[in-house]
Structure formats: structure tokens, C-alpha cells
Length: 164
Image 1 (spheres, rainbow, N blue to C red):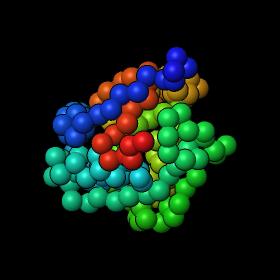
Image 2 (cartoon, helix red, strand yellow):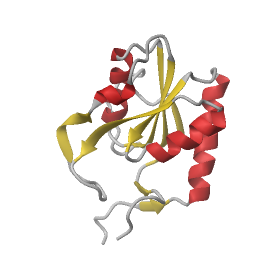
Image 3 (cartoon, rainbow, N blue to C red):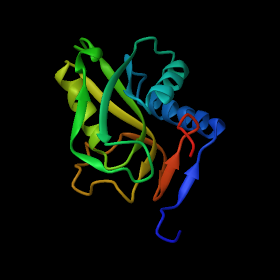
């Protein structure tokens, strides 16, 4: 259909290359003490990045903004956080948050705020893909992902996502 957004399907090879790109960018600015994966989509890239950086402290937190999976899924009015205690104590740590995609950027912003609240001394964010068509223009420079492997203006399907 003409009204459907452009959709790109990423291969595992592409995701591995994105993880390498993110790890290299982060390591140029000093490897973090801890990597946090945003559940669900950011868990796999976070594991890859943590291995590449040789960071053993890997944590996850559930932060969602979409109401369901699918192309251009509707967003909830507010970002939803499930069990922020999974972050544990981050006091004094340099934390790298990893997610698969930044759509509006609100999930990354909320997760960074959680890490700061948990005591992180430094918080950086990394996403495999940033969708510039949906990114909130009101995000401040400090709220935009620190590292982005791929910028697009369309929908991206990752290899671990259910295929219709």
C-alpha cells in the first residue's frame, strides 16, 4: 500500500555490525562499568555490546512506550516502567544504556533518568537505529541517544521480532 511506511528488515549480520559500531564509539569515550539493556528489544544488542566491551556487569530494565508490537504501533500517553528495581544500585558507576531503536526517544530518556535516579555517576545511551521521522524534536541535546549505529526515516524489523 502507498500509505505504509518504508520497512527495512535487518539481518543478524547487520545487528552484529551495529553492536560493533556502538561498542567502538563507547570505548573511544571510555568503556562503561555497567551495560543496561532496555527490555525487550534492547536485551540482545546489550548482550552483544557488553561482550564486545568486556563488561561483565549487565542489567536489564523494562521500559516501554508502545501499546503493542507492530509497524507504527500506537504509543501510551506516558512511558511505562516495569520493576525499576532490576537496575539495582548504580551508585558511582559509568552506565551505558542500550536499546534496539529510538522512535520518539522517550524510552531512552526515561531509562537514562532511571539510571541517574539509581545513582549512576555517568549515563550514556546507545541505540542500533534512530528513526528520525518519529524522533521528538523537543528532546534536548543531552536526551538524544549518545551513540547511534544507523539513522533511518522508516520502520525497522529486527531479526528476533515476530514476522507476520
